[in-house]
Length: 125
Image (cartoon, rainbow, N blue to C red; front, side, top):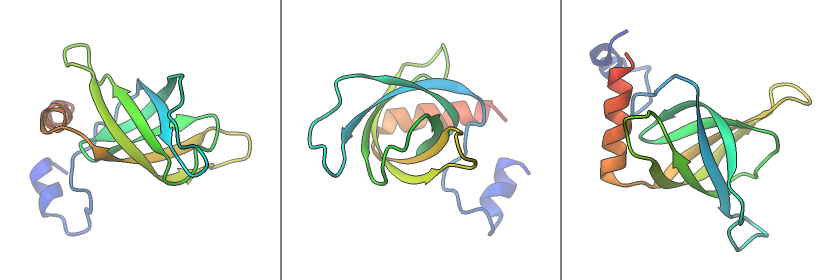
């Protein structure tokens, strides 16, 4: 299915095209229930996919639903680092003792950063 088909497909609910290639990103917890201050340390995570609306990554512990995250995403060597904020919207642990799949929705991302992600996503087709 190409982008035009995807946009016209009524079963496709995603607003933005995803980049489906593995890469790394950094995050730190900004705030969640019970923690009102940002974490000092940045953690590195393996990203499964990213779009201009959010990203899915793997992590070794449950971050908590609706946790706020500061994110630094490097989607390619030729684009600047994307700095944004996201909120945890879904947490999955497919099997016991496996990595958690953490889905985030970007809550604060600039127009330029969205354009970088969208442009990169179209180049990955």
